[in-house]
Amino acid sequence: MKPTTLGVIPARYASSRLPGKPLMDIAGKPMIQHVYERTQKAKTLDQIVVATDDVRIAEAVTAFGGQTMMTRSDHPSGSDRVAEVADQFDCDLVVNIQGDEPFIAPQAIDTAVQKLIASPQAVVSTLVSRLYDNKSLYSRNTAKVVLSNDDFALYFSRAPIPFDRDAMDETHLQPGRAHLQHIGLYVFRKSFLKKFVNLPVCDLEQLEKLEQLRVLKNGYRIVCAVVDYHSFCVDTPDDLEKARTLAKELSVVG
Image 1 (cartoon, rainbow, N blue to C red):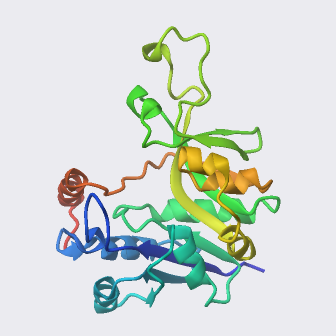
Image 2: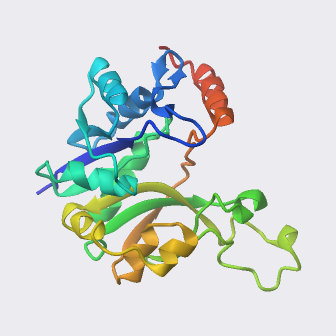
Image 3: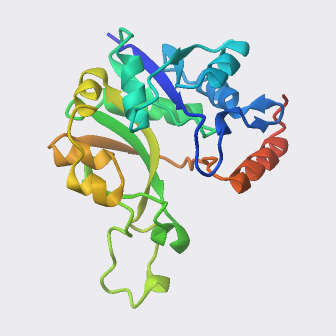
């Protein structure tokens, strides 16, 4: 029987670099509406909910016909906010969808869901893509991952892993040959999500600032699907302007 799948889009108003970004206008619509409408095109989701602690975001979602749920304001991460919402629904799988990706590919969501369904040993699935440029390889803002032969994550890091020992310097590294970039979309088994948010933060997670390391540190498995999709998150005012330009190029009509 097909597992029931809930898509949750956590959306916070507070942002150090771009306050109120879920409500920022892109081609005549708030960004959260773009995320919601593209997520609706995924074939594997049975329900979609925006999880927020801000009434302004909740009102905006209700205005365009979306489903929303108010959550506590003291959650340390998006996963905790997603878990609070998921606890109110009868579902098997829960998808944590980033609220700042206005051009998210519905097919990417479906790929991640299908990967977890096909991998009973895993409790979480996520997406990765080939990394082809040295700037991203060395960027602390880009999470890298190494995989086993059967697509299970061995480790995530902000460092350039695997490291090419024979490269003379960073200009001699060859991104794309063995380097993979993590895409921050997660599918959880609901039973594990409840357990995950109650696990203590581990040392690796504290060092790397990557919460998925808590999963691996505790002996659970994350399966990864390698895709051609490259995500675009809006984190800064410059990103917002790029998103507005891209929306025009894609003929997005408000």
